[in-house]
Length: 295
Image 1: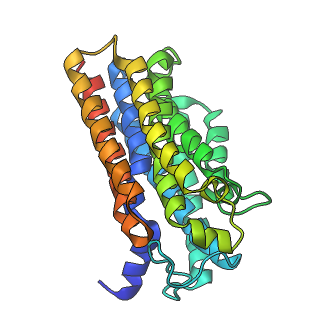
Image 2: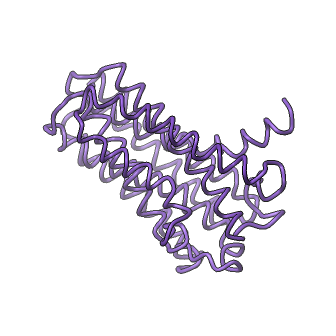
């Protein structure tokens, strides 16, 4: 693999993509729970979610570089544009080109969900850019975690379910699960901002970690996991076999152990913890998918 190809793969931030996949998997499980799983819209939702997250990752690299918010040799994963591996123009073109393709793909969901889904797609596209740019970049004002709960939790879970079932009757199960996945996804950003806190403070980027400090972010990470567990129990405790709750028990134990590692790590040592947080969320979403499909 060439150095240029490695740089582009790095810019996609593959270690974070399980976050977008988890929401769609959970939404697919909810549809299966109601006997309405449909392969075609499920796969389109999956590709749309992955495409939108890569767009957001590309936009983050390009706009943070353009606004002077990145520096060479930062603690986090290598930034191709900042390090000179990818030209700013190429990253800008890739961002908007992939955004256009992702939006076209998303438009096909109109077949199952109706024309009003265009507005949901527009909101997702705006979020992919607004996280890093615009008059009020979300990531620069401590709003990134809230945005993740909405766009990596509520939106993919609820609307993946809807385009398969065509109904809102599944909300008693889908809504709490969507928020649970959102809180799990927010923890990936918590680790990211926890690691980058000093770099972000120096360039005036006011993430939640910069505003609140490390101890508060550690508490937030731990609390998010327990809130997610509570929401999962609200959704599933009375409707699935109690044996499936083993998955929730395993999740919270691994979450606690990861939190302990978070509290005792700094700098680049946090990179594996970020990946582990995303993977734990992904594995739990697989468990939910199977649990809801086979209940």
